[in-house]
Image 1 (spheres, helix red, strand yellow):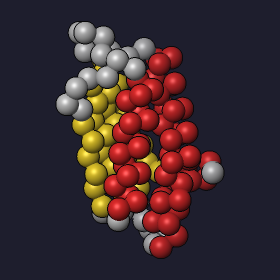
Image 2: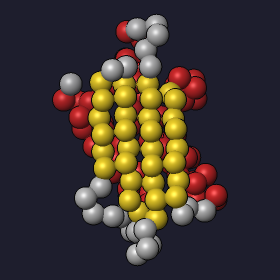
Image 3: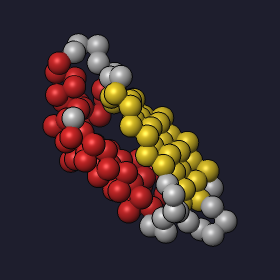
Image 4: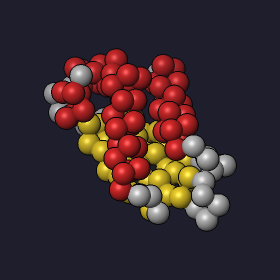
Length: 109
């Protein structure tokens, strides 16, 4: 499974988020990739030798101590952008929600 993570390029942008929390977020993102997206991403990678999977993640804490975000997924040319309308209080819910929405979209493809 960790082999999958080596093939996924992830760029993080954190604002007003402590270093320990950043590491926790990165771990949660890796867990989501391995547990929710492995089937979909492995299929993309298996169908094309030079397939690219890019994920750009921006998370910031606002003045109300809530989290705003933008997740941009590019799965070998297929793009999905997930941003917030309402900030989340719980960072774990935010990350899990973003990956649930992506998985939902991939299951429709």
